[in-house]
Image 1 (cartoon, rainbow, N blue to C red):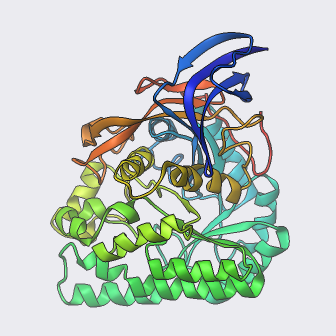
Image 2: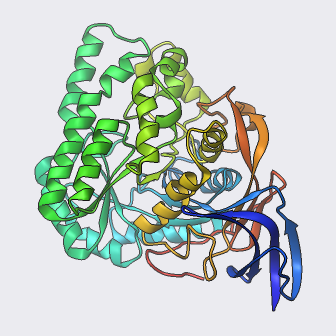
Length: 454
């Protein structure tokens, strides 16, 4: 057998197993996994992964690259470069660009625009709003992997009330599509903002009270009820509460296709960090108290969190910095696509979770939920050769000046991490080599729902 690439002597990690193996790549696919002592034919390039762990390229299902329309925040080249540097080889870009993706026309135009600008592979979500229910089927047939919507008015997106949700979920069920939904009750967040501002609450912790636990709970429980009524496939976005993870798990145990997304920042940041850093930790829903964050780890390890997404939503430094004087003046959103794996590898080193669990929730499960598995999300014969060689020993300090994303900052600035994606391959092409970014625009391509687009 002749192969383009051999990654030898690494420990290949899946959700359920870890084993030493050689990985042979021909073209864009993994063509063989063998015992390290077994050599197969001629190889063009060899990478020795002795002492390294080989995991699938991460699938990040929740990113906002803001391109087209808001290139001052991020563009697709810088955003997908940041993804590659963070070990992410497939992203699911959301609809909130300019124009937002609410019809087939906007979906097709966005695919054409982004194809030459992608460093990693990408999928696209369409958007759901009260008046575009009739547009869902067309976008689904054109390859959208799902539809994002909000129960609150946020980021210039309209709120879906229970009546809207019932109509939309019925259509989602009819066409066989799926929903990712941001859950905060609009009436409660509106009331909270009014009361806090009337009481001259401009301190950093006012954000925690505004994007409250109650607002999230009311919205999630409403969405679960409507999802059960319709049978629609629904993912609850960025869940921050162990209580809500339990409610979602109960529904799944009853046989309903309802799943939980969370984010690395809900496992690593707390209200104590918010009190110190203010606008740099302003996102929605808010960070939670330390004891809540501690309980999130238990839910992760017990399988209550289906997958982790970054909710990468960057803003320029100067835009966030205005909130240092008045947190209401800063927008909601933080970057995260390039730091998520590093903070989770740090957690592995500290015994908070396992590398197998990281692979499950950052590679395998997101690929399965969005119809990309087994093309993506696994190191296996026939899968795309999306491979990340992880050095679990490498220590570093996350610093704003090292950030690849155009925003140039991270909420984890100053944090020591242990674990680095030393090599990253996309379909057998090197994006990161020995810790240095080598990927270029045009190496990534659009991946439609459910299909091998090679």
